[in-house]
Image 1 (cartoon, rainbow, N blue to C red):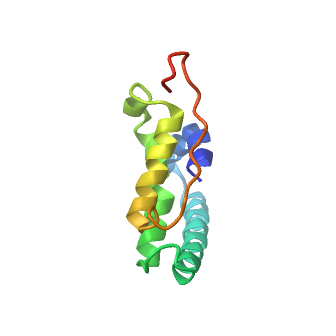
Image 2 (cartoon, helix red, strand yellow):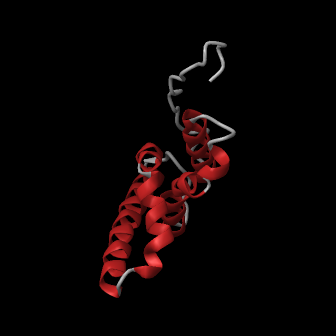
Length: 122
């Protein structure tokens, strides 16, 4: 999910910046779409908790956090892009979310293949 949100940063930033200018119907449509994602993640988090992949969590709160935190990459790109690579941002957000959900010690997440700049460093 973080990768998809990262790849659509311009649209996310535009939505946050200009949502105040939308008519009520358009804003309602956007919020309904966001709500659909929250409900989907509530379901996924419930399944993960039942399967023992994460401890029980307040699903609505966790779903809101999981769907919002990756948008931070778009909202704070003015700072982050100068200091870290795309891969480091995505890995960092993913690791943060997994730790927050209590999943980092319960599931193995394959390391992302990193591009290097020739020095062996990403």
